[in-house]
Image (cartoon, rainbow, N blue to C red; front, side, top):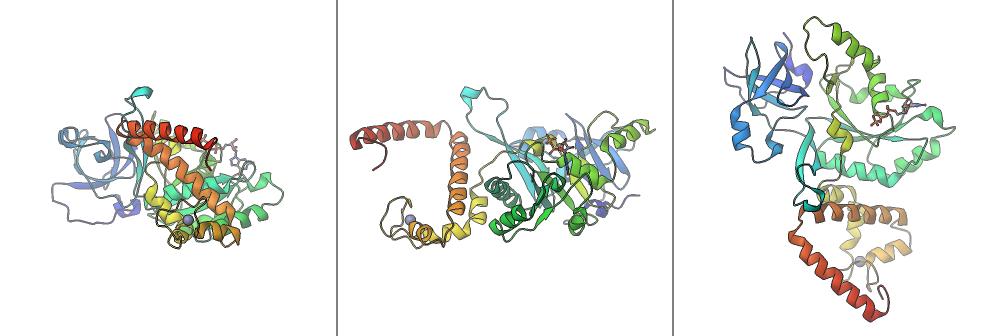
Length: 357
Ligand SMILES: Nc1nc2c(ncn2[C@@H]2O[C@H](COP(=O)(O)OP(=O)(O)OP(=O)(O)O)[C@@H](O)[C@H]2O)c(=O)[nH]1
Ligand SMILES: [Zn+2]
């Protein structure tokens, strides 16, 4: 018998006798792999999911705790998804031709994780504003962010980079590691406690798979090879999506996690940039755009250095990205308004004899 607590399960509601709790560890087209007290089983969704689900958000995803009717002889039947304590979703453009993007649907890609490891490589293009952007996503997910600078072996001295990142995000732990030599990996132990779940966020090539391999203590390819010999003959061809580490912690690695885009990150911005937005309250005008307005607290803070210019640029950059996603989210209702705005702007530009005053 497997104790589901080792998979991070905490009983949050009484479970009817005929139902069994489980955690989704793998997702295929119609079939899910779920770990329960009887071990790993396959399951399908009860028909009502397809009839009553308002959106794909309501479907179970890797990391979810579910309730199911256990079937010893075949697929079990999932009847309910338990409330999620954290989740990552991404904007889903599928099903729409590019020119007809009406709304961006939300698609859940991982749930019920404790930590979000934000990976960034030390050897090329270490970009603090990108890290901050990922931080915004992480905060919105309700996972606890941890920044991990990878590939320490490829740079001579990473101390200045480490200091720069640490100072930009003083409230977030930052670690420098090397997955090849194992240097710094022990700093991650406090997060990798039994029953805890971690997801990795970061650009392609930063070393997510390598870190997962290092934490697994073996090459995942070998893991798969072993599984192929596995006499139960299950899951031999599919890619596993929730990994149990030797430490007892788990890592969720789904294709969706690797393609995360910003999705209505407004809330996260407020969490990440409170130090910037506090200045807004001090501006003389409520609708201050912080550009040329008299009595603008932001401009004053930038001038005397109490608001670092870098920090302000990060804020602006992120605002732009959100606008882009949001403008698509509300398309086409907004389109007319936007076009009108552009027309008015260009008229004004002509009148002014140039861009802005
Ligand atoms: N020198 C060195 N190379 C590393 C380290 N970690 C990863 N790499 C290399 O960086 C490259 C990319 O690593 P991956 O682990 O595949 O990166 P990833 O983030 O999983 O990339 P995607 O699968 O595209 O998302 C590989 O060639 C790794 O061998 C490290 O600590 N040191
Ligand atoms: Zn202002």
